[in-house]
Amino acid sequence: MPVFRKTQPNTSFTSMNMILYGFPKTGKTTLASHFIDSGKPPAFIATERGHDALGVSAEMVTSYDHFLKLIEYLEKNIEATRQEHSCLVVDLISDVDQFISRQIENDKKVDYIHDLQFGKGSKILSNMFSDAINRLLAILPCTFLAHSDEREIVWNGEKIKVQQPNLNKATLKWLNGKVDLIGFISPSNNKDLFAELYVKPNPLCIAGCRYSAVTGVYPMYKDEPNKTIKLIRTNFNSIFEGAKK
Image 1 (cartoon, rainbow, N blue to C red):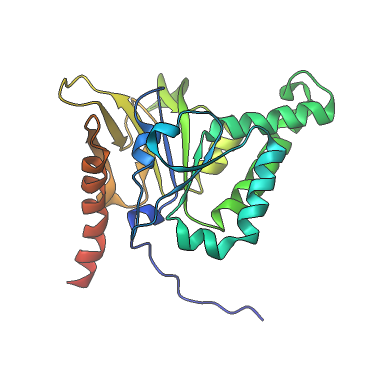
Image 2: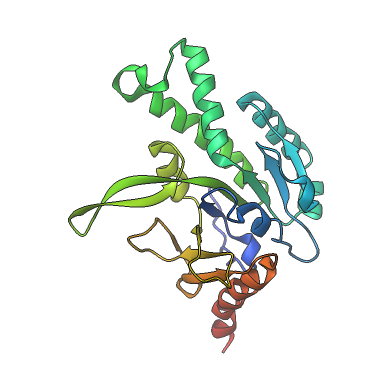
């Protein structure tokens, strides 16, 4: 017989599952490297080099099989992983998406995943992607980093071009339903800022947050990512401070 328990709300910013995306060199990795909670740093699952200068805990993966083996290792060492790290950062999740596509193409002996009939390739991709990511989400909160891609959508009855994470349509739809926050990092026109983090639905990009207090546009200062994180934490913590009154 099933036993139901009352869920506990997230009380830490780093306990949210997130997608952060943007153009290359806009500070995605640097921002995520400061997702420290109670002295515990994040652990990076890296698909490209460039983390050495940040001094983070990182493990490179270069294929879908390698990605699964890392997940299996984390599952076997789950308590130690949770004691040592605040969250997992997949950098880049769009590369993991491509790893799975290449795996399917090799297994099915096709040049391109969409050569498979009747959307079969997208379905297999979505299933393999969701199975792997669900296992990650069961270990620790996850932040997924991706490059940006311009795509056409319908906004208020009109076709417009917006920025979206560079993921296959099926995997983006699934992952968007799993995260609490999706943020777009854009270069800023303000000369005093390095970039701006959009956590707010708008015609420019796909972005938003389950917690309305967190929605907004946050300045990102060059070499000072903690200033941005402090602003987000303040808004996030206000949810629970208000509940106590």
